[in-house]
Every structure is written in structure tokens, then in C-alpha cells.
Length: 130
Image 1: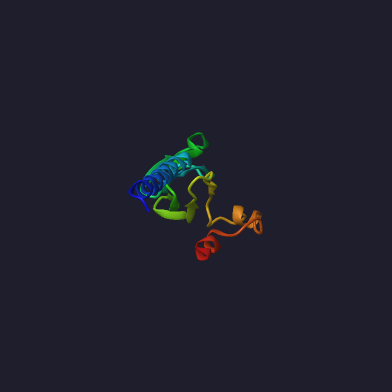
Image 2: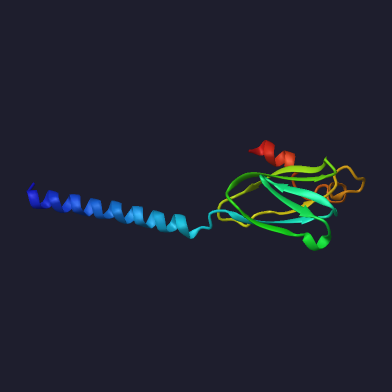
């Protein structure tokens, strides 16, 4: 084999490799890095914690809370007068719309889990699946 043929092959392989890396970077950035989640709060005068962020919801006017979140697991907690009313993990999947969540008082009878039982997996089932 001649030197020119080997040199042309190495250049072609390098060009293909460089092109692949560039296309990979473009594809990686074309997908949104996280997801937007919408949180509807059904209680008044509560403190809502989304991971380390704190939101005060005094009336329905303060809801919904809309946030852009990184991919991965997050925690939504709602408290009133120091008592935890709602505490659930949820997952944001890269490139997908985030979940629409409703924070309610889980201690109250006829709360949404009773009305919507069977609609989908419970948050505990979601965590166990991962």
C-alpha cells in the first residue's frame, strides 16, 4: 500500500469521526434539557416545597406553580402549620413534558387519591419501579 492511500484513509476516518461528534452534540442540544412541571395546589395558606425551593400559597390565585426542572427525581412537599400534608417524589424525563401535579391534603377524607384511584400508578409504585 502506498503512503498516499493510507493517508487518505486516515483523513477520511478522522472526518467521519469529527462529523459524528458534531452531529452528536447538535442532537444532544436539540432536546430540551429538562421538563416543565405544573403544580396545582388545592389548599390555602400552605407552604409548598419543590426540592429546595419554597413557595407560599395563600389563595388559589397563587396556584399553579410552573417550573422548569432538570431531568431526574424531585420531591414535592406541602406543609401547613408545620404539618406535612403532601410529600411525594416524581420524575422528570429528559426531552419530555414534565408531570402536572396536584398537591392536596392527604389527611382529609375524600381527597383526590380516593376519587381517582385506579387512574394510574401511585407515586410509591413509580418509585419502586425505578
